[in-house]
Image 1 (cartoon, one colour):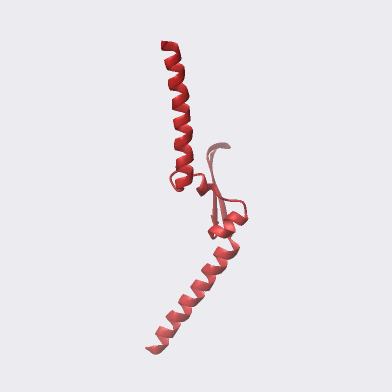
Image 2 (cartoon, rainbow, N blue to C red):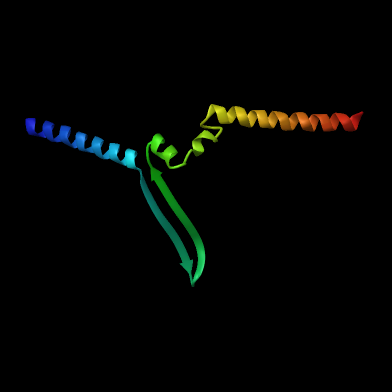
Length: 99
């Protein structure tokens, strides 16, 4: 009974070590799915998956989440400011036509 508890603790430690290494180094998984019928491509799907820590991703130059308005409050504010400016300009043009 005690041996099983030790095995689980060791397995958890090994899993934690593996996860730490993967996040620290990063891992890329790539695959392509291609469906053809009589030498005619019907479907082409390219799948790319990167698993890494945020620090490692930023070190690699990957930071798309910083510009995504659904994930970053800064990006959301920038998008709203841009839309606000666009609407103000549009309103000024409409008002100028009315006068």
